[in-house]
Length: 126
Image (cartoon, rainbow, N blue to C red; front, side, top):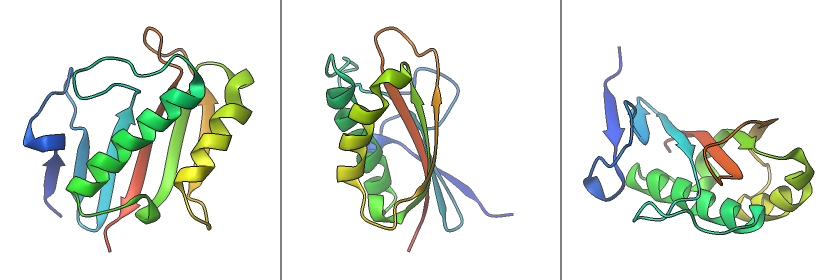
């Protein structure tokens, strides 16, 4: 069985619960659902566009700790609090990825507090 190596942004475990922000298992990198929080834990942005940018920057940070980029992402799962925001979310999302885009599942979910979007990804370490 492959070893599981946790990924902590900046090398520190600041998780609020019993999970790893990221996990390397063999050639795969799993990034837990990222919200629009900055390094101090404050929510960044009031709009779905602003929050999507912050979420994807957070995903990029964790991927970088594993030696990956967004180009290595093969699957994303998106939780959005209001599907009425989908087009605005998608416009920002597509600027972070190159074609062929990763596979994606997008669902409407009840998210914590004022969070409008949360994204988790799976990447393949090259």
